[in-house]
Image (cartoon, rainbow, N blue to C red; front, side, top):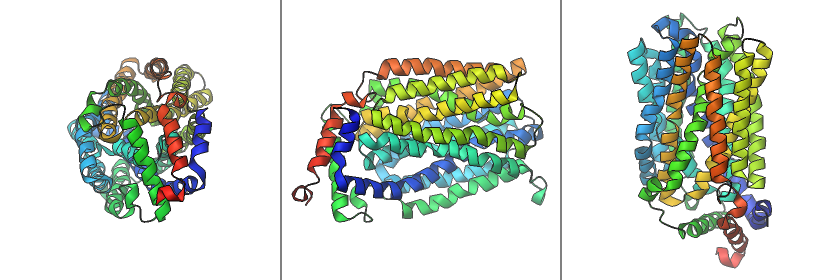
Length: 461
Protein backbone atom coordinates (compact mmCIF):
# COMPACT_ATOMS: atom_id res chain seq x y z
CA UNK A 1 0.00 0.00 0.00
CA UNK A 2 1.40 3.41 -0.91
CA UNK A 3 1.74 6.28 1.54
CA UNK A 4 -0.90 8.17 -0.45
CA UNK A 5 -3.48 5.43 -0.02
CA UNK A 6 -2.59 5.16 3.64
CA UNK A 7 -3.18 8.83 4.06
CA UNK A 8 -6.48 9.00 2.23
CA UNK A 9 -7.95 5.74 3.50
CA UNK A 10 -7.91 6.55 7.20
CA UNK A 11 -9.40 10.01 7.71
CA UNK A 12 -13.01 9.72 6.64
CA UNK A 13 -15.55 12.53 6.88
CA UNK A 14 -15.02 13.18 10.60
CA UNK A 15 -11.25 13.31 10.31
CA UNK A 16 -11.28 15.55 7.25
CA UNK A 17 -13.80 17.90 8.86
CA UNK A 18 -11.79 18.06 12.09
CA UNK A 19 -8.44 18.72 10.44
CA UNK A 20 -10.00 21.31 8.17
CA UNK A 21 -11.20 23.20 11.26
CA UNK A 22 -7.81 22.82 12.91
CA UNK A 23 -6.01 24.19 9.86
CA UNK A 24 -8.32 27.18 9.68
CA UNK A 25 -7.95 27.93 13.39
CA UNK A 26 -4.30 27.10 14.06
CA UNK A 27 -2.39 27.87 10.87
CA UNK A 28 -3.23 31.57 10.22
CA UNK A 29 -1.83 32.60 13.62
CA UNK A 30 1.20 30.31 13.27
CA UNK A 31 2.01 31.69 9.81
CA UNK A 32 1.56 35.28 11.00
CA UNK A 33 3.90 34.74 13.95
CA UNK A 34 6.58 33.21 11.76
CA UNK A 35 6.10 35.95 9.17
CA UNK A 36 6.95 38.55 11.81
CA UNK A 37 9.83 36.47 13.19
CA UNK A 38 11.43 36.09 9.80
CA UNK A 39 10.91 39.77 9.03
CA UNK A 40 12.66 40.84 12.24
CA UNK A 41 15.64 38.53 11.86
CA UNK A 42 16.22 39.32 8.16
CA UNK A 43 15.39 43.03 7.89
CA UNK A 44 19.01 43.74 8.77
CA UNK A 45 19.77 42.78 5.15
CA UNK A 46 17.84 45.83 3.95
CA UNK A 47 18.97 48.08 6.78
CA UNK A 48 22.56 47.37 5.70
CA UNK A 49 22.02 49.29 2.46
CA UNK A 50 22.20 52.59 4.38
CA UNK A 51 23.11 51.61 7.96
CA UNK A 52 26.58 50.30 7.05
CA UNK A 53 27.75 53.71 5.87
CA UNK A 54 26.13 55.52 8.79
CA UNK A 55 27.79 53.42 11.51
CA UNK A 56 30.89 52.28 9.60
CA UNK A 57 30.41 48.56 8.85
CA UNK A 58 32.40 46.70 6.21
CA UNK A 59 31.06 43.51 4.62
CA UNK A 60 32.77 41.18 7.10
CA UNK A 61 31.52 43.15 10.12
CA UNK A 62 27.99 43.17 8.71
CA UNK A 63 28.14 39.43 8.08
CA UNK A 64 29.45 38.76 11.58
CA UNK A 65 26.70 40.83 13.20
CA UNK A 66 24.01 39.34 10.98
CA UNK A 67 25.18 35.87 11.92
CA UNK A 68 25.83 36.50 15.61
CA UNK A 69 22.05 36.46 16.03
CA UNK A 70 22.31 32.67 15.72
CA UNK A 71 24.87 32.32 18.50
CA UNK A 72 22.42 33.74 21.02
CA UNK A 73 19.69 31.69 19.38
CA UNK A 74 21.68 28.44 19.61
CA UNK A 75 22.78 28.90 23.23
CA UNK A 76 19.24 29.25 24.58
CA UNK A 77 17.33 27.06 22.13
CA UNK A 78 17.10 23.86 24.20
CA UNK A 79 16.45 25.60 27.56
CA UNK A 80 13.76 27.68 25.88
CA UNK A 81 12.00 24.63 24.47
CA UNK A 82 12.14 23.01 27.91
CA UNK A 83 10.26 26.07 29.17
CA UNK A 84 7.69 25.69 26.41
CA UNK A 85 7.16 22.02 27.28
CA UNK A 86 6.80 22.95 30.96
CA UNK A 87 4.55 26.04 30.70
CA UNK A 88 2.68 25.38 27.42
CA UNK A 89 2.84 26.97 24.01
CA UNK A 90 0.53 29.93 24.68
CA UNK A 91 2.45 31.39 27.62
CA UNK A 92 5.91 30.59 26.34
CA UNK A 93 5.41 31.88 22.81
CA UNK A 94 3.96 35.08 24.27
CA UNK A 95 7.14 35.52 26.33
CA UNK A 96 9.31 34.91 23.28
CA UNK A 97 7.34 37.33 21.10
CA UNK A 98 7.41 40.20 23.57
CA UNK A 99 11.13 39.95 24.37
CA UNK A 100 12.21 39.60 20.75
CA UNK A 101 9.94 42.50 19.78
CA UNK A 102 11.70 44.68 22.34
CA UNK A 103 15.16 43.82 21.02
CA UNK A 104 14.08 44.01 17.36
CA UNK A 105 12.92 47.57 18.02
CA UNK A 106 16.10 48.30 20.01
CA UNK A 107 18.14 47.74 16.84
CA UNK A 108 17.35 51.38 16.08
CA UNK A 109 19.85 52.27 18.85
CA UNK A 110 22.82 50.69 17.04
CA UNK A 111 25.66 53.23 16.67
CA UNK A 112 28.70 51.11 15.82
CA UNK A 113 30.09 47.58 15.54
CA UNK A 114 29.92 46.84 19.28
CA UNK A 115 26.27 47.80 19.81
CA UNK A 116 25.38 46.10 16.52
CA UNK A 117 26.88 42.81 17.73
CA UNK A 118 25.38 43.05 21.22
CA UNK A 119 21.80 43.77 20.17
CA UNK A 120 21.83 41.17 17.39
CA UNK A 121 23.04 38.60 19.93
CA UNK A 122 20.30 39.57 22.39
CA UNK A 123 17.69 39.44 19.62
CA UNK A 124 18.73 35.87 18.82
CA UNK A 125 18.67 34.91 22.50
CA UNK A 126 15.17 36.39 22.87
CA UNK A 127 13.82 34.52 19.85
CA UNK A 128 15.43 31.22 20.87
CA UNK A 129 12.95 28.38 21.04
CA UNK A 130 10.33 29.93 18.77
CA UNK A 131 10.84 27.76 15.68
CA UNK A 132 11.18 24.34 17.39
CA UNK A 133 8.30 25.27 19.72
CA UNK A 134 6.11 25.77 16.66
CA UNK A 135 7.34 22.51 15.11
CA UNK A 136 6.55 20.66 18.32
CA UNK A 137 3.18 22.41 18.59
CA UNK A 138 2.24 21.16 15.11
CA UNK A 139 3.06 17.57 16.13
CA UNK A 140 0.32 17.89 18.78
CA UNK A 141 -2.36 18.88 16.26
CA UNK A 142 -1.64 17.08 12.99
CA UNK A 143 -1.06 13.35 12.29
CA UNK A 144 2.31 12.53 10.73
CA UNK A 145 0.80 11.70 7.32
CA UNK A 146 -0.56 15.25 6.97
CA UNK A 147 2.41 17.07 8.46
CA UNK A 148 4.52 17.87 5.37
CA UNK A 149 1.71 19.91 3.83
CA UNK A 150 1.12 21.69 7.14
CA UNK A 151 4.84 22.41 7.48
CA UNK A 152 4.80 23.68 3.91
CA UNK A 153 2.05 26.15 4.80
CA UNK A 154 4.08 27.21 7.83
CA UNK A 155 7.31 27.55 5.84
CA UNK A 156 5.45 29.71 3.31
CA UNK A 157 5.87 32.50 5.85
CA UNK A 158 9.60 32.64 5.03
CA UNK A 159 9.47 33.54 1.31
CA UNK A 160 6.24 35.53 1.80
CA UNK A 161 7.87 37.53 4.60
CA UNK A 162 10.84 38.26 2.36
CA UNK A 163 8.60 39.02 -0.62
CA UNK A 164 6.27 41.43 1.19
CA UNK A 165 8.90 42.73 3.57
CA UNK A 166 11.31 43.62 0.76
CA UNK A 167 9.35 46.50 -0.82
CA UNK A 168 8.12 47.69 2.58
CA UNK A 169 11.68 47.73 3.95
CA UNK A 170 12.93 49.49 0.83
CA UNK A 171 10.31 52.21 1.25
CA UNK A 172 10.96 52.59 5.00
CA UNK A 173 14.61 53.31 4.25
CA UNK A 174 13.44 56.49 2.56
CA UNK A 175 12.09 57.93 5.84
CA UNK A 176 15.40 59.68 6.56
CA UNK A 177 15.04 62.79 8.71
CA UNK A 178 11.54 62.15 10.08
CA UNK A 179 11.64 63.03 13.80
CA UNK A 180 15.43 63.14 13.54
CA UNK A 181 15.81 59.43 12.76
CA UNK A 182 17.40 57.66 9.80
CA UNK A 183 15.35 55.44 7.50
CA UNK A 184 17.02 52.27 8.78
CA UNK A 185 16.06 53.23 12.34
CA UNK A 186 12.41 53.61 11.32
CA UNK A 187 12.64 50.20 9.64
CA UNK A 188 13.61 48.53 12.92
CA UNK A 189 10.98 50.39 14.95
CA UNK A 190 8.02 49.83 12.62
CA UNK A 191 8.87 46.18 11.91
CA UNK A 192 9.65 45.36 15.56
CA UNK A 193 6.46 46.58 17.23
CA UNK A 194 4.12 43.91 15.71
CA UNK A 195 5.94 41.15 17.64
CA UNK A 196 5.11 42.87 20.94
CA UNK A 197 1.45 43.28 19.97
CA UNK A 198 1.18 39.64 18.89
CA UNK A 199 2.85 38.55 22.11
CA UNK A 200 0.01 40.16 24.06
CA UNK A 201 -2.63 38.52 21.83
CA UNK A 202 -1.18 35.00 21.59
CA UNK A 203 -2.41 33.73 25.01
CA UNK A 204 -5.93 34.71 23.97
CA UNK A 205 -5.82 33.27 20.43
CA UNK A 206 -3.85 30.05 20.90
CA UNK A 207 -4.97 26.67 22.34
CA UNK A 208 -2.33 24.42 23.91
CA UNK A 209 -3.64 20.92 23.10
CA UNK A 210 -6.53 19.24 21.23
CA UNK A 211 -8.40 18.31 24.43
CA UNK A 212 -8.56 22.05 25.29
CA UNK A 213 -10.06 22.99 21.90
CA UNK A 214 -13.53 24.27 22.84
CA UNK A 215 -13.88 25.54 19.27
CA UNK A 216 -14.14 21.90 18.06
CA UNK A 217 -17.34 19.89 18.40
CA UNK A 218 -17.14 17.16 21.08
CA UNK A 219 -16.87 14.35 18.52
CA UNK A 220 -14.19 16.26 16.60
CA UNK A 221 -12.23 17.01 19.76
CA UNK A 222 -12.38 13.37 20.84
CA UNK A 223 -11.39 12.12 17.37
CA UNK A 224 -8.34 14.36 17.23
CA UNK A 225 -7.20 13.72 20.80
CA UNK A 226 -7.64 9.96 20.40
CA UNK A 227 -5.87 9.91 17.04
CA UNK A 228 -2.88 11.88 18.30
CA UNK A 229 -2.66 9.87 21.54
CA UNK A 230 -2.69 6.55 19.69
CA UNK A 231 -0.16 7.70 17.13
CA UNK A 232 2.10 8.80 19.98
CA UNK A 233 1.59 5.43 21.71
CA UNK A 234 2.59 3.52 18.56
CA UNK A 235 5.83 5.47 18.21
CA UNK A 236 6.56 5.55 21.94
CA UNK A 237 6.68 1.77 21.93
CA UNK A 238 9.91 1.88 19.89
CA UNK A 239 12.10 3.36 22.65
CA UNK A 240 12.61 6.07 25.23
CA UNK A 241 10.92 9.37 24.49
CA UNK A 242 11.70 11.51 27.54
CA UNK A 243 13.22 14.98 27.24
CA UNK A 244 16.86 13.88 27.68
CA UNK A 245 16.54 10.99 25.23
CA UNK A 246 15.84 13.48 22.43
CA UNK A 247 19.18 15.19 23.12
CA UNK A 248 21.13 11.90 23.01
CA UNK A 249 19.38 10.37 20.00
CA UNK A 250 21.81 9.75 17.10
CA UNK A 251 19.15 10.87 14.65
CA UNK A 252 19.02 14.24 16.39
CA UNK A 253 22.75 14.79 15.91
CA UNK A 254 22.67 13.63 12.28
CA UNK A 255 19.75 15.87 11.36
CA UNK A 256 21.46 18.73 13.19
CA UNK A 257 24.50 18.39 10.93
CA UNK A 258 22.36 18.14 7.81
CA UNK A 259 20.23 21.11 8.85
CA UNK A 260 23.43 23.14 9.32
CA UNK A 261 24.13 22.82 5.61
CA UNK A 262 20.59 23.78 4.64
CA UNK A 263 20.60 26.77 6.98
CA UNK A 264 23.85 27.99 5.41
CA UNK A 265 21.87 28.38 2.20
CA UNK A 266 18.78 29.89 3.84
CA UNK A 267 20.54 32.74 5.61
CA UNK A 268 23.58 33.02 3.38
CA UNK A 269 21.18 34.02 0.61
CA UNK A 270 18.49 35.74 2.70
CA UNK A 271 20.79 38.11 4.57
CA UNK A 272 22.77 39.02 1.44
CA UNK A 273 20.00 39.08 -1.19
CA UNK A 274 19.40 42.88 -1.02
CA UNK A 275 23.14 43.54 -1.39
CA UNK A 276 23.41 41.11 -4.33
CA UNK A 277 20.41 42.68 -6.09
CA UNK A 278 21.72 46.19 -5.46
CA UNK A 279 24.91 45.16 -7.29
CA UNK A 280 22.93 44.24 -10.42
CA UNK A 281 22.47 47.91 -11.35
CA UNK A 282 21.96 51.44 -10.09
CA UNK A 283 18.76 51.11 -8.07
CA UNK A 284 17.14 53.07 -5.26
CA UNK A 285 16.39 51.22 -2.03
CA UNK A 286 12.71 51.10 -3.00
CA UNK A 287 13.58 49.58 -6.40
CA UNK A 288 15.81 46.99 -4.73
CA UNK A 289 12.85 46.06 -2.53
CA UNK A 290 10.54 45.45 -5.46
CA UNK A 291 13.18 43.45 -7.36
CA UNK A 292 13.88 41.24 -4.33
CA UNK A 293 10.13 40.55 -4.18
CA UNK A 294 10.35 38.57 -7.46
CA UNK A 295 12.42 35.51 -6.42
CA UNK A 296 10.64 35.18 -3.09
CA UNK A 297 7.17 35.40 -4.66
CA UNK A 298 7.99 32.61 -7.10
CA UNK A 299 9.53 30.59 -4.26
CA UNK A 300 6.32 30.90 -2.21
CA UNK A 301 4.26 29.31 -4.99
CA UNK A 302 6.82 26.54 -5.41
CA UNK A 303 6.94 25.79 -1.66
CA UNK A 304 3.22 25.06 -1.55
CA UNK A 305 3.32 22.82 -4.64
CA UNK A 306 6.46 20.96 -3.53
CA UNK A 307 5.22 20.37 0.02
CA UNK A 308 1.93 18.97 -1.24
CA UNK A 309 3.81 16.67 -3.59
CA UNK A 310 6.12 15.46 -0.82
CA UNK A 311 3.07 14.76 1.34
CA UNK A 312 1.32 12.77 -1.40
CA UNK A 313 4.32 10.62 -2.28
CA UNK A 314 5.74 10.34 1.24
CA UNK A 315 9.26 10.58 -0.22
CA UNK A 316 10.54 13.32 2.06
CA UNK A 317 14.25 12.57 1.62
CA UNK A 318 14.01 12.69 -2.17
CA UNK A 319 12.06 15.96 -2.22
CA UNK A 320 14.37 17.74 0.22
CA UNK A 321 17.51 16.56 -1.62
CA UNK A 322 16.25 17.50 -5.10
CA UNK A 323 15.20 20.90 -3.84
CA UNK A 324 18.66 21.55 -2.35
CA UNK A 325 20.31 20.54 -5.62
CA UNK A 326 18.08 23.05 -7.45
CA UNK A 327 19.16 25.71 -4.95
CA UNK A 328 22.83 24.84 -5.34
CA UNK A 329 22.66 24.96 -9.13
CA UNK A 330 20.78 28.27 -8.97
CA UNK A 331 23.46 29.83 -6.76
CA UNK A 332 26.22 28.45 -8.97
CA UNK A 333 24.58 29.93 -12.07
CA UNK A 334 23.96 33.25 -10.29
CA UNK A 335 27.62 33.45 -9.31
CA UNK A 336 28.70 33.23 -12.93
CA UNK A 337 25.87 35.37 -14.35
CA UNK A 338 26.27 38.36 -11.98
CA UNK A 339 29.05 40.03 -13.98
CA UNK A 340 27.55 38.96 -17.32
CA UNK A 341 23.78 39.45 -17.42
CA UNK A 342 21.62 40.81 -14.55
CA UNK A 343 18.40 39.28 -15.94
CA UNK A 344 19.88 35.78 -16.09
CA UNK A 345 21.42 36.33 -12.65
CA UNK A 346 17.99 37.21 -11.24
CA UNK A 347 16.47 34.10 -12.84
CA UNK A 348 19.21 31.99 -11.25
CA UNK A 349 18.60 33.64 -7.85
CA UNK A 350 14.91 32.85 -8.25
CA UNK A 351 15.73 29.17 -8.85
CA UNK A 352 17.97 29.25 -5.77
CA UNK A 353 15.19 30.72 -3.62
CA UNK A 354 12.74 28.09 -4.91
CA UNK A 355 15.13 25.29 -4.02
CA UNK A 356 16.14 26.62 -0.60
CA UNK A 357 12.62 27.24 0.69
CA UNK A 358 11.19 24.19 -1.05
CA UNK A 359 13.60 21.95 0.87
CA UNK A 360 12.65 23.11 4.36
CA UNK A 361 9.24 21.46 4.87
CA UNK A 362 10.14 17.95 3.61
CA UNK A 363 13.43 18.12 5.50
CA UNK A 364 11.98 19.19 8.85
CA UNK A 365 9.13 16.70 8.55
CA UNK A 366 11.69 13.91 8.88
CA UNK A 367 12.95 14.59 12.42
CA UNK A 368 9.41 15.67 13.34
CA UNK A 369 8.19 12.20 12.29
CA UNK A 370 11.11 10.34 13.89
CA UNK A 371 10.89 11.94 17.35
CA UNK A 372 7.83 12.01 19.59
CA UNK A 373 6.67 13.35 22.95
CA UNK A 374 9.15 15.19 25.16
CA UNK A 375 11.97 13.78 23.01
CA UNK A 376 10.53 15.72 20.08
CA UNK A 377 10.57 18.94 22.09
CA UNK A 378 14.23 18.54 23.04
CA UNK A 379 15.39 16.90 19.80
CA UNK A 380 13.81 19.49 17.51
CA UNK A 381 15.24 22.24 19.69
CA UNK A 382 18.74 20.77 19.44
CA UNK A 383 18.43 20.27 15.68
CA UNK A 384 17.33 23.86 15.27
CA UNK A 385 19.99 25.08 17.69
CA UNK A 386 22.98 23.34 16.13
CA UNK A 387 21.63 23.65 12.60
CA UNK A 388 21.09 27.36 12.93
CA UNK A 389 24.79 27.85 13.62
CA UNK A 390 24.88 27.74 9.84
CA UNK A 391 23.11 31.08 10.07
CA UNK A 392 26.20 32.38 11.86
CA UNK A 393 28.81 30.74 9.65
CA UNK A 394 27.34 31.45 6.20
CA UNK A 395 26.69 35.24 6.39
CA UNK A 396 30.09 35.80 8.01
CA UNK A 397 31.87 33.60 5.46
CA UNK A 398 30.12 35.38 2.59
CA UNK A 399 31.13 38.74 4.06
CA UNK A 400 34.77 37.66 4.36
CA UNK A 401 34.78 36.35 0.80
CA UNK A 402 33.15 39.53 -0.50
CA UNK A 403 35.74 41.71 1.24
CA UNK A 404 38.58 39.52 -0.04
CA UNK A 405 37.42 39.42 -3.67
CA UNK A 406 35.46 42.65 -4.01
CA UNK A 407 32.44 40.85 -5.53
CA UNK A 408 29.58 38.50 -4.65
CA UNK A 409 30.59 35.57 -6.84
CA UNK A 410 32.80 33.63 -4.42
CA UNK A 411 30.19 33.87 -1.66
CA UNK A 412 27.51 32.39 -3.91
CA UNK A 413 29.82 29.55 -4.97
CA UNK A 414 30.48 28.78 -1.31
CA UNK A 415 26.75 28.58 -0.58
CA UNK A 416 26.22 26.39 -3.65
CA UNK A 417 28.84 23.94 -2.42
CA UNK A 418 27.24 23.76 1.04
CA UNK A 419 23.81 22.97 -0.38
CA UNK A 420 24.95 20.37 -2.91
CA UNK A 421 26.97 18.46 -0.30
CA UNK A 422 24.02 18.60 2.11
CA UNK A 423 21.65 17.34 -0.59
CA UNK A 424 23.74 14.25 -1.25
CA UNK A 425 24.26 13.53 2.45
CA UNK A 426 20.56 13.97 3.24
CA UNK A 427 19.46 11.58 0.50
CA UNK A 428 22.03 8.92 1.38
CA UNK A 429 21.11 9.04 5.08
CA UNK A 430 17.33 9.33 4.99
CA UNK A 431 16.13 7.61 1.80
CA UNK A 432 15.86 4.16 3.42
CA UNK A 433 14.64 5.38 6.81
CA UNK A 434 10.94 5.43 7.81
CA UNK A 435 10.91 9.20 8.29
CA UNK A 436 12.53 9.68 4.87
CA UNK A 437 10.04 7.50 3.02
CA UNK A 438 6.59 7.18 4.60
CA UNK A 439 5.99 3.87 2.83
CA UNK A 440 8.62 2.34 5.13
CA UNK A 441 7.04 3.67 8.34
CA UNK A 442 4.82 1.17 10.19
CA UNK A 443 3.46 4.03 12.33
CA UNK A 444 1.80 5.49 9.22
CA UNK A 445 -0.13 2.29 8.67
CA UNK A 446 -0.99 2.11 12.36
CA UNK A 447 -2.14 5.73 12.37
CA UNK A 448 -4.36 5.06 9.35
CA UNK A 449 -5.92 2.14 11.16
CA UNK A 450 -6.37 4.26 14.28
CA UNK A 451 -8.16 7.05 12.43
CA UNK A 452 -10.37 4.54 10.62
CA UNK A 453 -11.32 2.73 13.84
CA UNK A 454 -11.91 5.93 15.80
CA UNK A 455 -14.66 7.07 13.42
CA UNK A 456 -17.18 4.61 14.89
CA UNK A 457 -19.43 6.43 17.41
CA UNK A 458 -19.07 3.63 19.94
CA UNK A 459 -15.31 4.15 19.95
CA UNK A 460 -15.49 7.91 20.25
CA UNK A 461 -17.81 8.08 23.18
